[in-house]
Length: 218
Image (cartoon, rainbow, N blue to C red; front, side, top):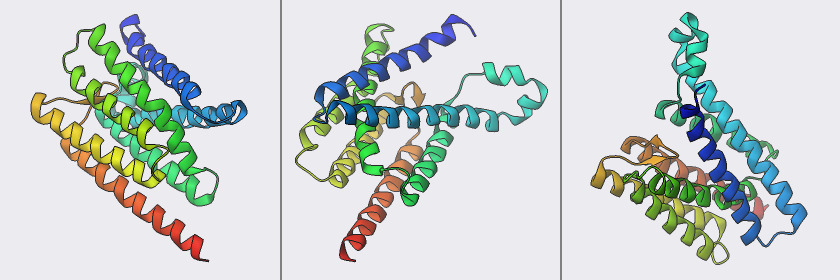
């Protein structure tokens, strides 16, 4: 693997490390709880990376049969990213339903880490690579991060996630209407996928809130 292919990967890792540092700085949890939360979040992030590799293999099965090494060297595209999100969502949903994963704690930790990580990544793209497409994303993630930090202690987790999901979807679609390209960690986002995530996210939030309300009644 060439250094050109490694650099984007290192930038993603570096951004996530900065996100973890922000989590340690702003979180009110005690040190041991922070450590547990970060370990759980990293476990899910690693699972997501594995799902991207699995998705890349599934999407390139004909090439895998002809040249396995070429598939491994082939960069993951947006299709693999979309499929990995589906696999991760299914995995998290199963873990939450079975009680193995504390869903809202994990979601809050991931937001604490990934929102600043996304902001730092877009900042690097703009400052280092002079990528003008990163400016819209940078502004959007700055707004999302500010909303998360301001609303986190004032609203329920359900409401916070709903607000963030709505602002993210609206921001992404607005960026696409202006410059015809928007991304998450350099994976291009299509309008249909943004709308699908928005609808699926709100549907799962509705199911989760109803289930929680039912459990509180009995």
